[in-house]
Length: 175
Image 1 (cartoon, rainbow, N blue to C red):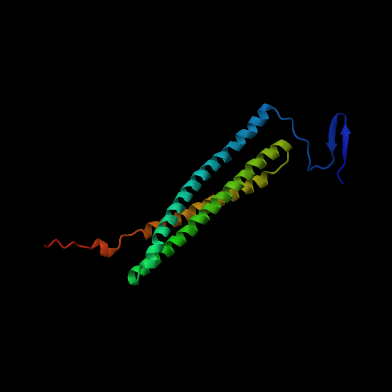
Image 2 (cartoon, rainbow, N blue to C red):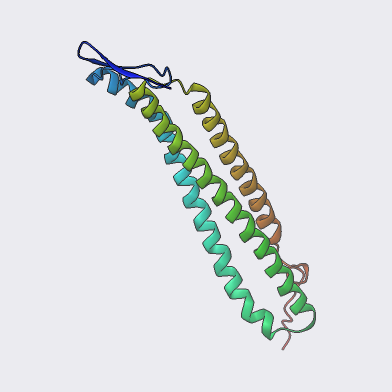
């Protein structure tokens, strides 16, 4: 059981896991802030990527809203074409949503990393392995989010094709 006692004017704790906060000078705090700046720049990049994903998702949703009434009014081959497009749009929405989820997860892990950097510096605890694991988790999440986004952009570019019957359409100029 940990014991706490006074040694002169200092409070002493027998538990090696709990240490007194180090003397924090302006220089020490400045160094802590400098170490935390790189992950904050990462958060800025993740935010920009989230903005791109949200814009893309919005455009996909707008297109699906455009397709839905046309699907309900169509018949035959045209109906099948609209169903195919709506299925592709649904798949794309799902992929962008996953990219957004993984990006936000990466941002949350990065925030935890920054908070832990500050807390460890203030308390003097050794949490280097935890910080490294948070950074690895953050990189894996954003990397997977980027990969899913890449797949969605490939799917989107493949689905935007001009139908061959339109490319071969000719206008009868008689009359």
